[in-house]
Image (cartoon, rainbow, N blue to C red; front, side, top):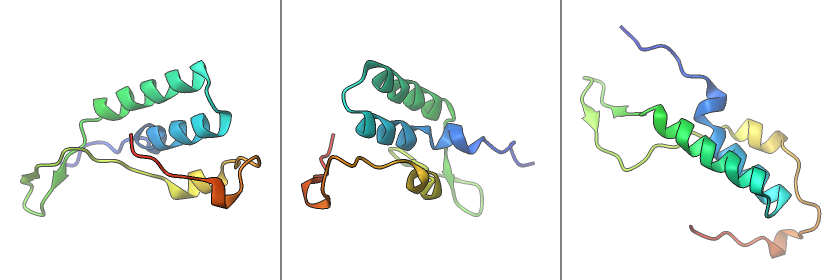
Length: 88
């Protein structure tokens, strides 16, 4: 029996919250949204499984809805050359 499907907004909330935080800049509400999204994602306890059902050990699993991210507004104050990706 398959488990019930998870709601996509919950599973993709971290990427969306991070994007909104980047758009808004330093903002306490946006930071709280990111922390909340991480908590919701971790509560899903996602597992990667083989076809036979055995669990594949992973450090993390992330789901990104690129359609949703592309539909979000962009920051107009930065040129493409100014955008620098940083690892956290």
